[in-house]
Amino acid sequence: MATEIRVPALGESVTEAIVGKWLKSAGDSVSADEPVVELETDKVTVEVNAPASGVLGEIKAPEGTTVAVGALLGAISNGAGLAVAKPAQPAPASPPQAPVAQAAPPPAPAKAAPAPAPAEKGNGEMPPSPAARKKLAEVGLDAVAVVGSGKRGQILKEDIPATAPKPAEAAPAPQPDAEPAAATPAVQALAKGAPVPVPVQSLRLPPAAVDAAREERVRMTKLRQTIAQRLKDAQNTAAMLTTFNDVDMSAVMKLRSEFKDLFEKRHGVKLGFMGFFVKACLQALKEIPAVNAEIDGDEIVYKNYYHIGVAVSTDRGLVVPVVREADRMSLAEIEAQITDFGKRAREGKLGIADMQGGTFTITNGGVFGSLLSTPILNAPQSGILGMHRIEERPVVRDGQVVARPMMYLALSYDHRIVDGKEAVAFLVRVKECLEEPQRFILEL
Image 1 (tube, one colour):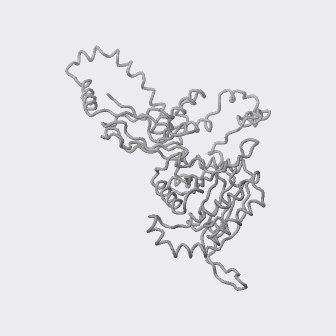
Image 2: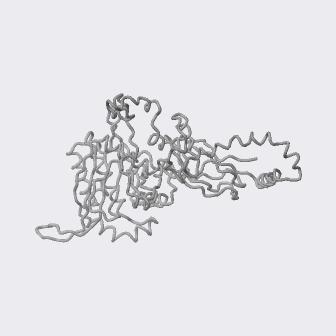
Image 3: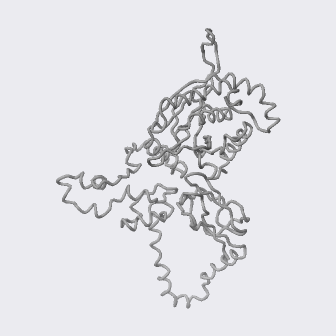
């Protein structure tokens, strides 16, 4: 008996995923709890394990397919079941009973009836996704007339509006003489006050033939689509401003250099810079609570807890795991948590719960050599601190020009909640704590 492989529950607010990669092929032996397929959600990549041992049968959801929670991905049969299925195929090839086969032609046309199915493949190697098939039926369009943008030419739901105008809107042919633009679906939708989706393909001109041959189209992962959407939503929603300051890192670097070996020996984790920045931000957040707040409708929600998101760059995109209750943690505990997050992020093993509930975010472009940037808010948060590279610059100390290791800091904030005075005061407080680490050690 076959055991079904279905899409598991993916976490709060996650209702669908994209089949990213099958780790096993049909016919491969699998063990119980062995990963067989990767699903890409808008937050993380999830591995689906085999529910039982056996042989992977037919794959129902190919790579690139969008699947809902609970959808069938494939099935696992035991070894015997597969062995029985294979001998069953030679049976039709028994030519000795030719007279009987002659009498059987009537059933043959019945089996040939499903032959039109290949036409549903369209111009690609894979059939349209379930959502695309439904859309094709609604529009009344043949799959062959649509160019798919999915993996191996699969037609996706998003491809249909870009290539298939609704028949009802194409009917008023007399109007083009008077005012052709008025007959377009976009103009009609705009007249009704409805949002007009703009296909990505329409935003670029067709490339020259010599250039088109050297282009490669790769479908955006679910995570990348979500990152793009959330960043754009943050820009469209928040009244976002950025204020800057610089910090002399001499004290932190001296402290780190002096105690890093003893720290690692005592706590089993390296002493980095991020722990100092988390501690400094905690001190500033307690003094400027608006930066730790968010807007909910016509209310401001002030959060009396501190969950600090730390941005981590991975091959799949940027993720922001959250150090929860950071104000109750020691410097060593914060460093250990951040190190663990970084490792699991690169291995694709972060859970959805690891990235929910943040109240403030820190991002470090300095690890890539960034000198200065304006980070975008991680909505619905009201503040994000940008760290940058440390470099020696001439500064004046006690009337003398000296070289000091300096870093530019950037605080992007939502001006709807945070006033300019508060934003500047926050960044100055962070600067003071870093230039005199004893301040946050003594909570001064």
